Length: 259
Ligand code: CAA
Image (cartoon, rainbow, N blue to C red; front, side, top):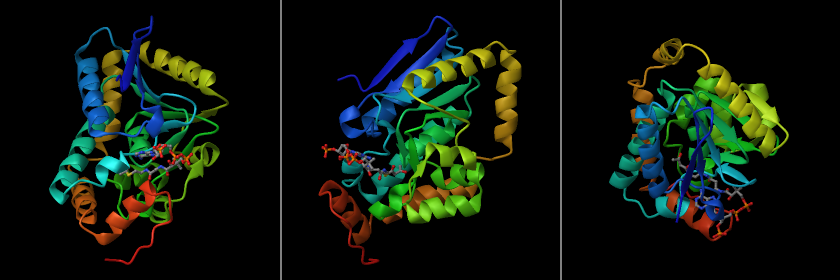
């Protein structure tokens, strides 16, 4: 089954579509590995000038890490998974070629984190954003605790991460989490293409250096990412994590005990 679709447009833009609509395009390890390979190849492919990342269908961009897969992981595997996701998202953030997220629906957990790693975010008005990991007895693991605070400020980031609340595209725009909101999927791809086309008409070295300079102010070496991966993995050893993920699979509210 094809989990990620790619298409190069006539203007040298690589469109990457995460395609697991039956699981709201959740990031299974297979999807993560596939995306990593595609992004690495795109960096070296001189015919690719810019990238648009989107999700299949009208409902979801990406609804997070795959919860069913996550629920089976040991602490060591969870740490490894967080680091793998963090490394991929850092690679996207540091791409010398512009990467725009075209958000066509739910961007939750790892999906919001993926969108935040892109250089810009454009969303349809039905899109919803959030870091709802606390509902599962876990914390964000793919850089959400760091990038959300960078984009919307620490106070609002903490509110979203601690409550697990979802926000609309309009709210996300007012917070600076999203650059533009459009009516529908067609307008989404049109605007994303227009913006990437404009950027790739500029000097590629200047574009790459501008990305590098902006990112230099937000050091990856910061212990925040390592702390996040460590505590993400620690959460998987708790009864609350077992309860939270079981409750999701069984489609019922979780009953947390703090153990
Ligand atoms: N992982 C695996 N499967 C998922 C999924 C996910 N993240 N999100 C949705 N699905 C599956 C559902 O289990 C369901 O499958 P079945 O039909 O087999 O039951 C299917 O996609 C459709 O989802 P729903 O029936 O739940 O659709 P809905 O419209 O009722 O609700 C939703 C939509 C609010 C987005 C809900 O699906 C939801 O809350 N999803 C989980 C969001 C979430 O918690 N994301 C964080 C994941 S953890 C993470 O990402 C950690 C990290 O930082 C790395």
